[in-house]
Image 1 (cartoon, helix red, strand yellow):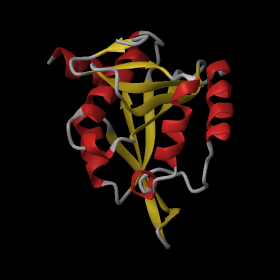
Image 2 (cartoon, one colour; image 1 turned 90 degrees about the vertical axis):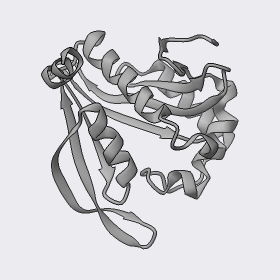
Image 3 (spheres, one colour; image 1 turned 180 degrees about the vertical axis):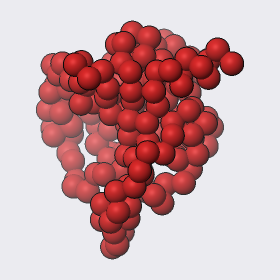
Length: 181
């Protein structure tokens, strides 16, 4: 495993490196990958390299690559907008390698990041926004323990129309209860 930070059963999470920039830019320019993300502008390798440098220096973001045990990078996950006073952060994830969709890697990466948020960073809440048409992601988040908190109507313009964003969160007490039970 290459610079493993959090290790799961079939994947591990590792810091993103500058050499990942070309792969990340390719994924972020693939409309099939980004149709469920809030990404709408093209990105080149240099722009992605600048972004990787910026997040590496950030005190409010933890972004990690999702890698299979054979070291193949398949996606990215992270916590952003870390609020240490109120002890919450926003969660994000995408599997960029479309051949790896539907294999449970996203759910495993989500569990690893949520565990890190609660057990290491001492957060009380992890929250996210997901576009309502991304039903597969909503089901995956619910399997991990996230609950729907609300709906931001007509909040995202995707594929020529407005969609609501579902607001979801997971509290530390719910996470601990689910792990104990």
